[in-house]
Length: 460
Image (cartoon, rainbow, N blue to C red; front, side):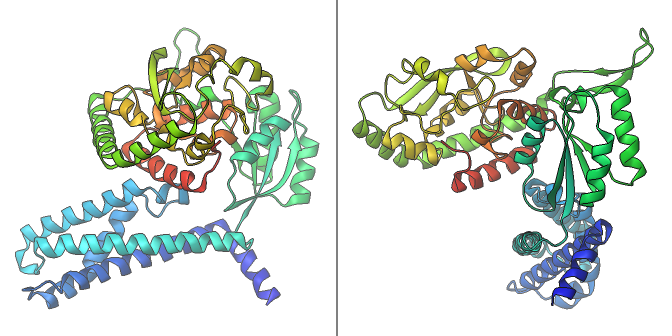
């Protein structure tokens, strides 16, 4: 038994084999999902084209898999788990199938059959993929198929990488301290020899001189080990590279991320639809919370706080009051006990939090009134979190780049650790979101936020 496990561990250690196996299994599951969807659709009353549809099943399944591949649903886990792409691929297949029925009406595929088959296949594929991902997670939990990673950099930089590195496909093999501006190649080589790491993650590369960084890259490349560099906040803005005519050297053209009018309209439509629906559906819950807050401690039900949003514009952010009514007056004596790094203020056991407020914070219920801010257009469902004026005044000028987007109720940093992350990590994640925004990314963040809230990750 132990021998077979070791053999399986070595086989899964080959990344190309693991990727190929993953693609084959996912494609087979998707094909089975569509086939079951077609069988279910053919049970519609009055359908008499069963034989013709079955004969076309290989073609329909092939198109289904090709469309899924075009939407990158067989890519690596962070990409293939995109719910927006998954739904979009299903609609795309349905559109192609409907177009085919118009060109070839003898196929026996009516609009009802296509739409029902796509819906059933979407549901079946969702369930199968969920079971697949859970199975992959169980495999990783058993230590099979994981890629050992060597993290290099200064101790604070390495600590941030380790906090962000979720357990799964990658496992920490070792660390190398690169303190100062010198790359200790001897220590790096020794660690690679002793740990058998297959990936090197370099944090704080911007602190190394060019010759030191190139020497490290050359050493790692000779060993056939890929090097991954943790980008700084500026690099994450990913401006386009141009050749400066005046200086004669490649320069990075840094621009503020922008959304065109079409994208802004779609994002705003999503904000209005979800916020309006949420306020209507949660009205009874709001009343119950208001009664609980009022009975628990004296003071108003809603807490109105000035926060800094897009383009440094202040807004009044609505929240259910989770602290004493004089909480802001009591903050200055507590500044010395601040547990957060950077400009923000965080305390795990803040004495100003009330009993009901502690419950509301653990489940992030206190932030639900911000749906009013979203409906008013002052905030969005997803975006960089608006910070209090106190935090804004302590921010460095470079950190204020995160104010180049409409603030949100939730953001990329909230699904990546929330209060457990440092202020620098929050800025880096906000910049990444701003540069890589899409509606599917927003949907992914919203769904993952629900999971983070249910698990109460980093909420206090």
